[in-house]
Image (tube, rainbow, N blue to C red; front, side, top):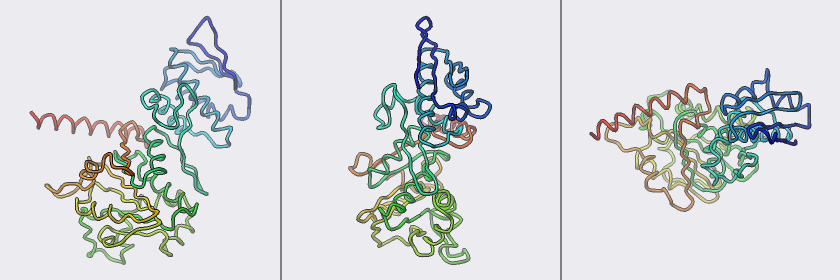
Amino acid sequence: MSPTADNALASQLELAFEDNRLVSQLYGEFDQNLALIEQRLAVQATPRGNHVMLKGAVSSVDQARRVLESLYATLEEGRPVEIADVDGVIRMIETEDSQLTLPTMEKKGKVRMAQIATRKATIIARTPAQDAYIRAMDRAELVFGVGPAGTGKTYLAVAHAASLLERGDINRIILSRPAVEAGERLGFLPGDMKEKVDPYLRPLYDALYDMMRPEHVERCITSGVIEVAPLAFMRGRTLANAVVILDEAQNTTSMQMKMFLTRLGENSKMIVTGDPTQIDLPRGERSGLVEALNLLDGVEGVHISRFGDRDVVRHALVARIVRAYEAAGARKTESNSN
């Protein structure tokens, strides 16, 4: 791939891609990938066979170049490029200058986003926060993923656990989530313990089935390799050689959170996810997640990944909904302080 610039017009750049077979995938159906780049980066991208002419502000043209080069490199590696991947690379490029500490970032270079691979699927980070989160799960024993719905914090945690299980780095995956107003009042529900808590753990199961073959998931659940462990049943245990995931952690009490965190055993990782703006605890009860974030920030071996509305990877409307609620909350806080 060889870029050439028109010296008479600094904001014009022509890119040439060598493999014609990959060009149509790079451009997308009806050139939708180029259209998204044009819309998001305020450039004009004109395809001419295996060449693309970029026009616009100097910085925007350079960003568009890096997006296209990164996507082309992905295709050369044999991985498909979807519209969501284009969006993810654009997000990474847009925040490059402010997040140069990310190990994937090279000034003015191609974006190499973190990924999680299992036999069934490969998940690639789509935002800088996701990139940092995936890398933190590789490095730290305890990782908090905190932020609004739709940012992928739970999905990526389960994907990471499935990857470690397939590689033989751990022996078990343990899934936990507060159930029924965080008080775990499960006695009135029919069925055994798994049947009682299954409705609350459905998002975790959905992610598992995306990462692993259904029959493998079922075998692992039956054999106890994948375990459903409500918080109340984890007291007194030491969880070794496992990845332990606590979802919806904002609805744990301080006592529950302390109990959970102190279950960590040898060769284990804990991943705690939650949204402090969605606390359903009784009035006056402090969230164990909020307390833990304050107490453990900066502790060696602990990493806190924070997600915002810009990291929402569901429908674009979800990000706008999150921003609207955050703005309303900020106004309410300001009003109360006055």
